[in-house]
Length: 358
Image 1 (cartoon, rainbow, N blue to C red):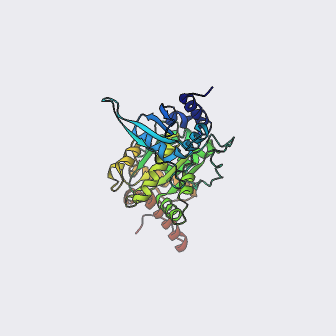
Image 2: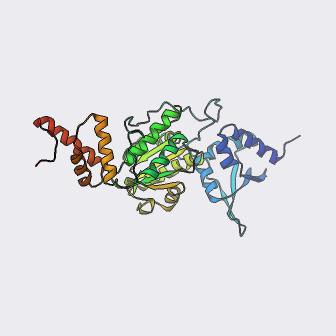
Image 3: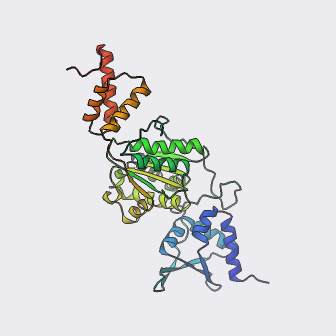
């Protein structure tokens, strides 16, 4: 007895489920509703709940779906989407799939790649997280200006991808400690979850890598690599404001990681609303988790930071000198440490004590 078209569709879902993670299946495939299949022109019509789901399926899973449909229906199936664009007014539209592209449709990650099949993606390779082991929560001095971001960062480091703080967008002026804090989150993740693929990357390096990948015709490899990350930390993203192609590529990487529950941490010198040149579709995604401001440290916190540095480095600097430096460093942690290093170098070279005497 021949199987019904609905039974063949259910068989397709079973195969797809075996080749993606449980979260991916629940998010992208479970909501799809089978409508019809035409034997005459081999057209499969399915309903999806939104244009966003349609775009994501076309971007990341159309290659997988095409292989499965061909196997089960024993034909080169033409896929058509019935997209619900307005549930309230029952408005929808039909769109035909563009079909798979070897360049534009990177293969999705599979279920841990523990039991590869003919449809599975490659096994992720070992990864250097590019983290600074000295920039930890232990060396990040807490104060009124950074208490909230630090507390949130600790929570993310202990439970990456499992809190409401995803993505975590941190912004603040240069020198306020953003790089230290996001690096500390990554270090904490690796301490607690050594098996996770954690990566810190500057926006500038990401752009250089992307440019090289395009030049070498390896864009697909570039996207696949970043889609394999469990905790992605990107610093100074304001540098992408004039790079639309880099932003478009990051948009697809961001979407993929976010939808499968991976942690995304972004740092910038300004809030999302002030990122000129960034499209609304990306700004809304930046804003869907938590946006936290890291303010310049006040004088008290600057004093605490300087005292912590002195203890850590075995330095002996009088309290009045520390207070003076804290009051004149314009709230920049980077400037604070630079002044202290300069004072120590001057003291050693000229064999003199550090004090407030002119």
